[in-house]
Image (cartoon, rainbow over all chains, first blue to last red; front, side):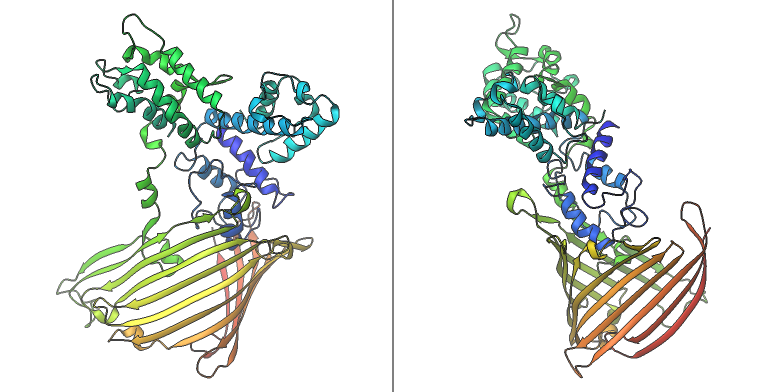
Length: 184
Length: 398
């Protein structure tokens, strides 16, 4: 169930871009009453963005979403069912999804830290076991890092990263952020 | 899929080895042939060579070279030297192999992957299965209702004593009503790996044949695409559809061509595609369509439906919408403006106005009793005969 709940969380983040005032649950309909979209919008904008990179699931899907897969009578739970179906996803278990999150966050953290360091560091030589303060010693740099992590990973993170999460080594920071992307 | 990938990492050297051949699924411990073995060097080199692409397939790419090396070393360390078996990997290694971690700080082992994968039926589809999934066999490709029903091949035989059979109905008749449809969604990548254009090309072979009577044949070849293009802030998307049909009969003597197309924008800010609240309890959504329809019969060749089909080439602008007042009163008008491009080149209006008042509903919004009314007036394509009708009814649903 945890993988379904985690993906439902991402589906909720996805629909918050279209309907921020609607509290989406697994039973929320895409049509009326619910998210209130019509069939054409569901089969065009919603379907395309679901399979897209910016707010969608291009990172997990193994295939594009068929035209008539979802309609006005479909629910957010139907989308989750499609997204976690082993036929459609690269990550059919929570463990695999968590491994993917570790890798995604490790790379994001590594690149951001290397970029924000003064002078910039080659990301390849960044030591994940070293404290963040080794590379970003001042508060301003760390706050910039926090904002950029929250922005760049916003489709994955269920609770925004607070300043306290950035204490310790890069490995420890990565673990804390991963916890914010998984519902167990 | 992950098991398959891990298996593929392990099994290839087994096949290449001079040792007795291993079964295909070396990692399925129960299936391991105790006589088979793999050279550790072969295993090492294959892991090094294939891990990057395997991890990429798992969605874990890009990965640093040292990470690949780390995973490879973990596998080799677990399978470390053994006095009994020398420099080979055998069945006795399997328990150790199961405990190999893919990531140091994550409890994800090869064994977990084996268990998590479950039965083979849960594996990701092969390329062949993916291609097959693009094809549909349905009752017809030409309308949405028939698309939802299965293709049908039937045989009917009447007794000679049957008195319900009319004079023109044959004693026995076979029917073939079905369509083979290819609908392949293709998302075309744009900048920053996002996909601004989504296309669903459609190709269909639609057959509607009743026995030996060629006059009722309708064999249609349909090609087209449904697409949507990402828009900007105001118009969030552009939707379009184009279909081209060629209709003929079983002998390919008849020939009729037609095409249809439309364009419609998505603009949720102004209620196009999504309900917009104009006042408390009053929501509205609507959608404009601009398009065209064309048909020309080159040769009817005795096919009844083509004998009576007119040639036409018409453009249309259609606006359809619906408004809801406190979920009780629903009003759904559709207005179409037609412009003939052939013949008289006249313009025509056609409109349908339907309304529903929900008299009784359940607390969760299910309608029980409603009063329905509809009014249609105007001239509709392709014949543009004047129409005017009013309907009134009561709907009851328990």
